[in-house]
Amino acid sequence: MQHSPALETNTGLDNRKLLMWLFLASECLFFGSLIAAYLLYRDKSVTGPYPEDLFDIPFTSVSAFILLMSSVTMVLALAAVQRGDQHGLRIWLFTTAFLGILFVSGQAFEFTEFNREGLSLSTNLFGTTFFVLTGFHGAHVTVGVLILLSLFVMAQRGRLTQAESLHVELAGLYWHFVDIVWIVIFTLVYLIQP
Amino acid sequence: MTLAEFRGIKPAIGEGGQAAEPVHRQGAHPGPAEYVKIGLTLATVTAVEVAVYYIDALSDVLVPILVVLSALKFSLVVMWFMHLKFDNRLFSTFFVGGLILVAALFVVVLATLGGALV
Image 1 (cartoon, chains in turn yellow, orange):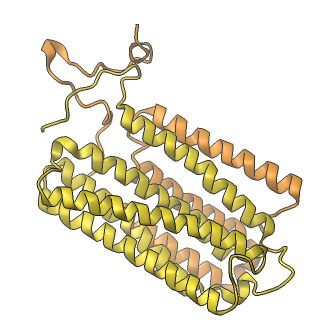
Image 2: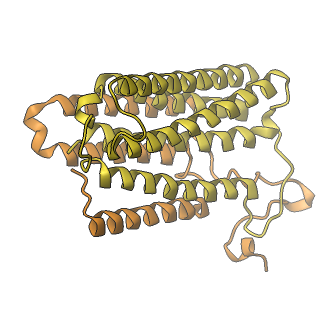
Image 3: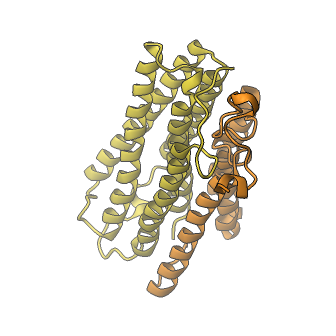
């Protein structure tokens, strides 16, 4: 198996991967703050609409399922590049990006529906905290899709070989992170209501 | 002595100047079949979560059930898909450190400002 050149670092670990984990740890605090703010203010709104008036659990469940399955396809892309399967890499990368686009489209549809029902960023505390939390998550997914599409183009041009599998691994870590954030949001925001 | 030697981590350059196993992949990752099995488990747990939400008889224990199921999904993704189960412990330390800080943040914010999970 061909590998990237061995690195000698103080920790004995690849600094890029170390940095990614540090970044994800900081992202935990970022989303933790937004979720805490949502939980704090969601039942403090003095005017509607309220969460129970708007949430469509079957629709959001499908969205959650799509994002969860995109994590499976992402890890299959990593397995493919690590065993030198370029065809598999391209298929799984594209599938992951496609599922990500589906998720973001679903979120855009949901935001539009909520807005039609009278909820905006400034309507009430629920609207403010909900849109900021889920909006930032959607922005993260969008960035993830752009990274995946970039990797797909690199793979198409033959510039993503087994030796560069770390690029896919780092993108995968980011992608799985946005997935676990949605696992938490789906439960705490959508399924558990006051 | 480097930090790597102090921590007992294998050097990246092997004997005879040959490149050793790349340092970012300390343990062997699972294969595609195992990933698909985990994926099916995640799909099943999600289906159970949604089913539990609609069962009125479980409304009293809904919150603990959903929290446990969510934690299970979270752990499966982190351990298997993000490879924390197989990779160097330093990565786990960073991530778990972040999670501990988040838990502290939740406790402080919700306890002092009067928020609640339900």
